[in-house]
Image (cartoon, helix red, strand yellow):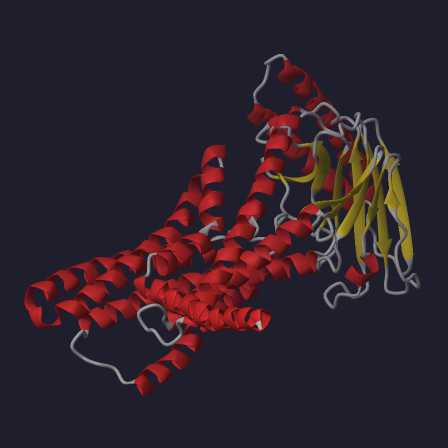
Length: 509
């Protein structure tokens, strides 16, 4: 019965593949539409999965079956509880290979020692128009391959799967090959990384099973522009880090002046400094291609970046909230001891909020960290664990600043005896609001950079120069900081002058 069903499904697959080939040729001359081609391709994948399932039977040790059709090559390997092999040899077709930890998958409690893997190569996809759906590509560089775990209960991978794909087209050294997988209607890259390539073969590492291919993703001119943007981004990030360090050094110099610094502002700068430093380090490692094979390290970096950037926004909110409380209580002096206790409490609260968000995100969607850029994966919807809190904080700060402006206007009209204090508070308010605009608004711009290279460049400039803008607002434009530096430089001159006189006198003598 199974043999007959296998033959029937095999014939269905063969017919579907031939139909898809006809549709592809028709599409090139405009005789069918893209939706029909996508639907037909998905039908092929489903029919092939059914065929592979019929080839799996429960075994005690190990078995392997190969089939070869006009448009399909496949290899099905199955292991049982009595298999004595420590690892499974490579599964291969005539042009491609796959490495998978099938033994580790079979040892899952749910699988009870049984697991099967199917590796398929579609030999009729070399000119598929599917590869021009949303990605601007030059050509398909390999055959299309698929990998599934048929009749396996727990399909979670214990290790990333590596595919060695033979190039079926001439390799263009001026382009960038990309490993992509099919996601219902589109080819996407999340979860797959190119870890090695030469003139004949490329190795892709993926953290899930699907249908894969190797493509040339960008044109030479676009690649050159992207390279220039990456270099510009790293230089700008370095400059921003230098000014963040200078800002923190200035705060340390003025640590006794509450008009220059406060707890929230210091912690905000520390969070930004660590975030931008880690981001720069990540970009350098990605450029050197030393980070791609280490999926866990990339995911951990993404989680830490998520935490640090969220912490910066939380501290920005806390600073606005403290300013709002100060404006509402202008006539109520605070003791130093109370401020000291608040400093401890604020430090705990400021970081715990961001840690809680990241912890919940990692627990709910653990596979959502570690995209190609070592950030949040777009296809996992985890981006809202960052964009959600950021949007809430930006909205809250806008409301707080509106209330602060109203309160300051009321105080100027009714508290004439404290005009000096109100003016000082108003100066702090305008600096804090400028800081809010500088740090918050660029992230709003990030929503619209996907389709505009100009907006992407502006976004890179604004984000990377956050440290520079903070230094200008809180140091360069601060009279207190200027006075502190004048005293410091004056002290150097006073201490330096007697030394010159002494040396001159000694020389004369």
